Length: 241
Figure 1: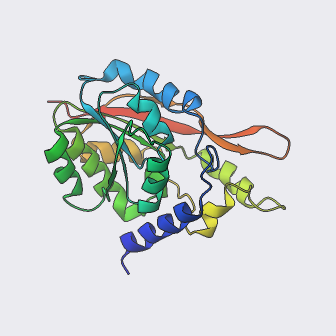
Figure 2: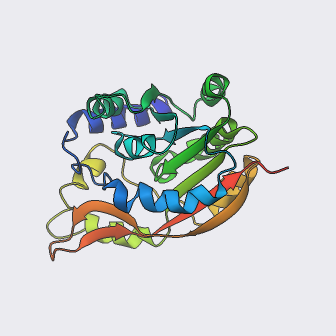
């Protein structure tokens, strides 16, 4: 079985067991504290807000549906069919469309670009959950989806998140309930060096237009009652002549 196949099967297993209710997954936070904050940073850099928006690695579509109220055409894309089942059930009105897509597979993004044309792309916390060898192909796929006019908002856990996650995983009582399934299915987060992300973007032919830091809000709490927030870094990038 290939690395990509193992990765896909891990996600299928995770999403088949995932709760259906909102907030049941570790990162499934309310869009008011996730996508809304990101969109405020992203919108000033959009060259064409009328382009389709691709929510890459959309999972159960919580953020996708938020964007569907704000963009004319939104596509939630994920490599897990089980995740997309969750997304479609939660979107009976069909606010967005959903697409099974392994963006690290060569040619998959080009095929979607041929259908949609240039797109804007949103990707939250996907690179650190990828196999290392798939990270550059994934960013190359983003560049293919953007074409000449699109922009990407990419947010990833920063290196400072590692000790936070490590402490949660090694708690005497075990990891928090919503974090435990991630480890159990073999998709434990991996560290992406802070300077690696702009490097992936440059290699893909993209220019970083803006960047910054922002806590990534989760749906889990520590025993003392505080919500778990993970340090993250965001980048807006585009193809610039």
